[in-house]
Length: 364
Ligand code: HEC
Ligand code: HEC
Image 1: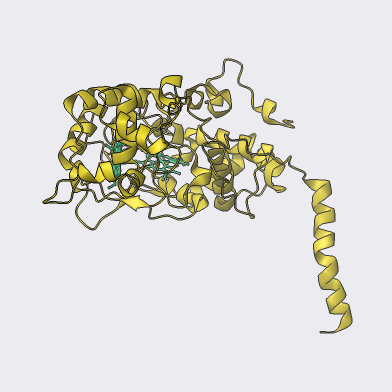
Image 2: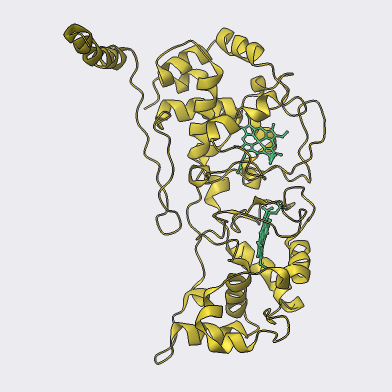
């Protein structure tokens, strides 16, 4: 390489960053989260969180301009009051078409690696574009959308604030939406002391758990749930870290394993909304629970537990009784994070009594 070309290559990024620093300087945003329940998030380097980007994403999320007939926003199907689901069995598109899937709760997406019930999309930036153009969903033409946004009185300025150029594109629209969604984070779940008590003096954790496991108490139930459910709902928010099959889909297929927090808000349940209540969900698991080959700590650690395996089938004989099923509702209610539905930062800005576009100019 000729020395001057080399020098130019070195100088180019410097030049670009110099120009950028003058025309566009969005404020970086640090994602705050409860480190007791969440590990480190995955944040793509090519779409860093900025205050301007997040606010733009929030406006776009709640703006029906994104749909073909300007009737439906992302927030129509992902409503904050239902932890970003819609309370319906199956989602209904902008033109009234019934979709084949239940609106999935949007939370902690910065910790996910797979999107949609069947996990078919691996990038959030790509996933957010799908509902916009899907014919029976928002049914939008992307060229039309970019034209509408570009002719809007405020969006060109807001895109410039967030991305340094008022030239709007699908790429930047998706980036802003993804930024906003990554900020929707659960703030931990606070368990009552009765579930957190430590084993008494002289008793090991395992002995304590085994003793509780057989008791018809909320504590016993908590351990039974942990035991029978956490083979799949296994991270600290009881979400899957992989895809699974719980007999709601044909053999060989797998679905995203949702967290068991905030189920108080996300009914109906499963990818097709087949169960209206947690009671219905539990009836399903009651029937199928022994078919799941869940590996669990207690099984490998406690000889006492092994004794309670059915010698013929080798499967656990600890079943969920009707009493348990009734109490699961109580337990899952406790596993709720109310901040997800009350946090104003996630709310619909257009519904604020004094909504004004210019408030989103020069935000920080
Ligand atoms: C008509 C209702 C509807 C609208 C409008 C809608 N969604 Fe959804 N959304 C759904 C349904 C249903 C699913 C599950 C789809 C599937 O699994 O195939 C979903 C899934 C998602 C997911 C995947 C979440 C996960 O945990 O895997 C994201 C992200 C998402 N939507 C974002 C958006 C955004 C952004 C918009 C607006 C551009 C939007 N949605 C508009 C119904 C809707
Ligand atoms: C073999 C893995 C597996 C086991 C074991 C399991 N689940 Fe699930 N669970 C899943 C999958 C996969 C889904 C999503 C299925 C679908 O969308 O149709 C799911 C969905 C759910 C949902 C619906 C959540 C929503 O937002 O729609 C609830 C509630 C639930 N499980 C509770 C439990 C409970 C309670 C237990 C223990 C009794 C349990 N699960 C055991 C894999 C499992």
